[in-house]
Amino acid sequence: MEKLRIVYLGTPDFAVEPLRRLLGKQRECSGCGYEIVGVVTMPDKMINKRGNQLLMSPVKQFAVAENLPVLQPESLKDEAFQNALREWRADLQIVVAFRMLPESVWNMPRLGTFNLHASLLPQYRGAAPINWAIINGDKETGVTTFFLKHEIDTGDVIYRDTVAIDEKDNAGTLHDKLMLQGGDTVLRTVEAIVRGEATAVEQTAMYDNECDLRPAPKIFRETCRIDWGKSASQVYDFVRGMSPYPAAWCELADAQGKEVALKVYEVEKELSRHDRPCGTLLTDGKTFVKVAVEGGYISLVEVQLAGKKRMPIADLLRGFSIEGFELKMN
Image (tube, rainbow, N blue to C red; front, side):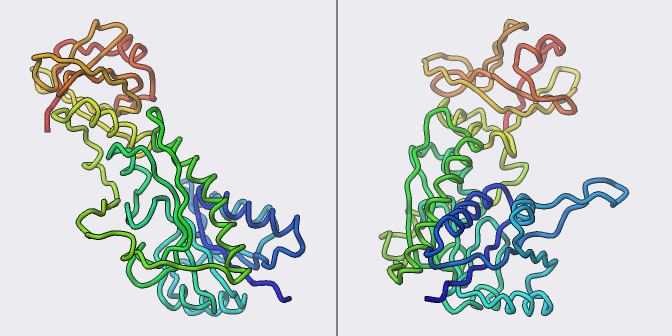
């Protein structure tokens, strides 16, 4: 039986693991029923001002090491790129953490194109599903494979696999959990398609009211600002959901009008009753800083002053006097 020809599209580390799993299975089992015939990824990036040093995407680095053909279009609508892609004669395309595809690309293979999304669709459609699942205090999330169609993240679902969110998880640790699960789910999806056993379910059959769906919009700098008026659990989850990237932040100001930006990477929460105004700073000036919030306190564990490196709060206090500063409230 002729093998399915697969083209893989992806860019960051998250997209490497599924490709690794697919290629590993292909090489260990001659009867796996598919072959990876090429990879599409972002163009190399300039990493110095002179423009003479290029950085390959993680997917390209892996593909080159595995001797896979690579295309790196500036524009996915470019005719030369689409002609080159067509020459690979793909039966199926797989998209993991890549750009939005024009229909002329995702509709090219006879079996279509499926995407891996880092949430349990239809929940958390959008650019930042990992961050928002933690910010919202969810106890579980997962990954979904689905066939692409015009509206972003709305295509028919093939498989969904659940991943637990632990109390100490942040966006970085959850990213790695989902990346590993994503490798399993993509491989399982391909194997089902090879066998002709893949069934896809419309997302509209998975919820009763669209108002119940939580979005995962792109995160901007102002999105990352900590609201100290929220509860201890909400602030704790917000910081975890923004760490290590793009990082939650706040501002300190003194009586003379000096303002200092502070990124916050790790905190601890203390649930307790108190009558202090939200945003009140408590510190011994040496080992701890904590902030009064609704229903308790948030202790700053790891932070970064603008222009400085990331460090434990005790290290910050050795070189920076927080006395006289107050938190700027939103």
